[in-house]
Amino acid sequence: MVDAVVIIAGIVIGGGIFAFPPLVASIAGSAEWMFAAWLLGAALTLVGTLCYAELAAAFPSAGGDYHFLTRAYGKDVSFFFAWSRMTIILTGSIALLAFVFGDYMSQVISLGPRSSAIYAGLIVVVLTAVNIAGLRESARAQSVLLGLLVAGLLGVILAGILAPAPPPAPAPAQAGAGPPAALGTALLFVLFTYGGWNEAAYVSAELKGGPRAILRALVIAVSVITAIYLAFIWALLHGLGFESLRSSSAVAADVARRAFGAPGEKVVGALVALAALTSINATMIVGARSNYAFASDWPMIRFMRGWNGARSVPVTAYLVQGSIALALVLFAAVERGGVSTMVEFTAPVFWFFFLLTGLALFVLRHTHPDAPRPFKVPGYPVVPLVFICTSAYLLYRSVTHAHSQDAVKIALYVMATGLAAWVVARLSAMRHCAGR
Image (cartoon, rainbow, N blue to C red; front, side, top):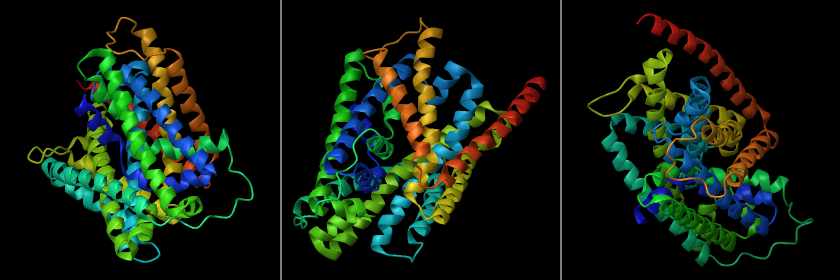
């Protein structure tokens, strides 16, 4: 049980917590609604995890969402998911987290007006090279980076406690916006910070002890993660004040400066930048291997099946992934949006496929009623419907809230290229079958 909780927390906690608190505070409009957004995000995370735990227990597969969508809707729908995961979801996440690294490294050593983008591009190249060097090297790097992530969180919490109380801010002209619109938009960033819970469900589904053990592990893990996040947010609020929090571009470095001075700012900034690499590296490892599996099903993209046996890595898949992520870093740099541009780029596609996966739970209960289900969602059908409605609402908010519609449009264009790729893939698969 303890091991499962630690693994789930390790999967979920990542670099997003260092980037999104100012955005959530700014959108929520008040400290009360800000904390409400993080608590609601925790509740919705638990709901989504319970739904995925049923799917993972009933249809176990390393393919995860790809496998569930294939079982529910067929290979054509899962092709679009895998294509979107390769070109938008995971590569967009890598680019986003690379900008988190760049924002904090720029607090340590600035490389000029485009410092964050330069650092982001460099780290994509470097970590791609590290992972191509071999699984052993990337696993070692991940262990070190995870330790830095924990140290970074603890360092910021300590800084927030020790920082002198900020001067009281003048009363705002109007109260912060309340639900539903402001809170819904804030949840886009909150739930990205809780991201990884779908992978966490696969871990929980393998627990011994039956449904109660799975439910207990998920509740404890989400509670621990929520407690860590709330402590972190409270420390930022205590050390910076609400107005400074919402306007900060690097909250961890800013609160460290107030607590420890300029040297502390540099140390914590460097620590957080290195900690952000944990999420980037983990996403790269998962992404390249899922692209390799995708290539195994479709002859058109078999070139991504290039595997180096000596290093135990899918080299071609890493190169494709790194190239796409680098292109997205360039796009975000041109848009001058960095993290926020990548959220606007990935969120609509991200929530669209979560919506389909939520619906797949109902489809598979109907089409495979006799499949063994070691774990069933408690509160069915209400709990899955909450997940589906949340996904639909956040899909809507992700499209309508975007400050720059360019990111949303480009995501849709990339999806359109997936349609063309699907036609070619279908024809290629037909020729492949005919040639046997």
